Image (cartoon, rainbow, N blue to C red):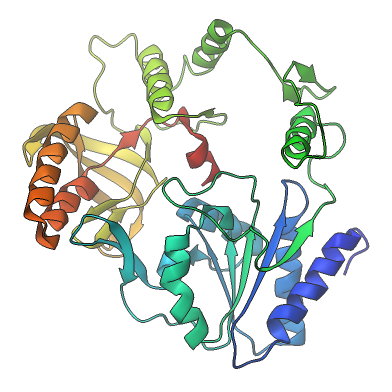
Length: 390
């Protein structure tokens, strides 16, 4: 190992490898690697992979993450194939006859017996996912390493219990990334210490900029909005958005996106719902039956659209180009996008009432068939903090 590793990183690599690789080969094992931003979790993961490949070359290592975006980031860093946890364990969403969403097996998990499975961004893993994989982990004697930061946002509709201390956990504490006076990281660490009880006084936010222009800008709301809109006033369809805005709620993200889009296209006589070549972000998974057509957070580019109606919902049939889809065997896809959220919710409310009254799984399947087929395509200027996390 190189000398730049801190002692807690060295200890983490040795102890986690010992826990996973040297444990009983006929039994499963679980470890947790945690630490705040900048403590080098990814660096440690890379070194764990190198050490296992060197010391135990016959051991299979599988890499996965909680979302497609996180999987892409980890794949770029690790230089190895990375998939989502749902795909690796062959899980897919389903619905019970009472309308409760659940995870069910979509096939046989092909992870070899005794493999080391590293799951990144584990703060987004809920107990529902853990319950779905527990039998697979035990039957195949898998060695799991959960990697994440407990201070990141939890799953929106579930509880994450991975970091509650009940599992073998190694915590990194030495901050490496962004060290050297970046006020953003310093302030984040102050808030973390306050939440952990290390600090008694709650930190405050104020403008703090270093010599490189990095840091925290505190502005009146009107000034902030004006600067944000001005940044993209000359935006052209399809261009990259280098600094998207994070918001706490969906409504705020929608409002900011609408505001910037109107400013960017204000010279048009009529602002079209979509423009050829326009770059948009998929806000939620789009499914046709049990086939995933668009992934959450997928970047797509508009080809063309026609106005129409589907299942009583007014909207647009949109042809677009995105990531390669194994079901369609193409990166070109066609989806339906509602004209307004209210129009879609009206129909979904009616379908939900039918499902509740029928108390049948068929009724709920009809509801989710419509719900999961609707494409929520958003401009790339603003998104929620959950989306930013992955």
